[in-house]
Image (cartoon, rainbow, N blue to C red; front, side, top):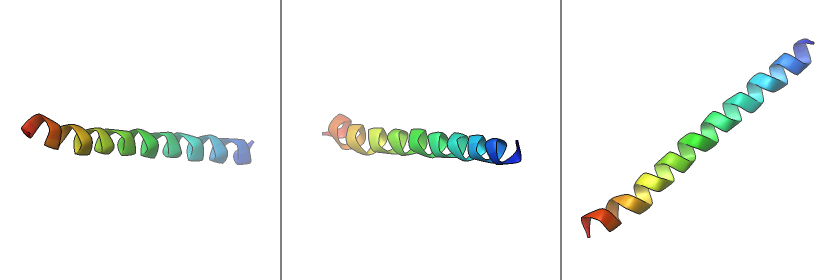
Length: 36
């Protein structure tokens, strides 16, 4: 069970990192376009 819990936590961490990456990409792409 411990292995499954650790894997689940790892997946959650990965999803969080992916969402943060997507947010940063959105800000990087939308920022200059909105200013220009």
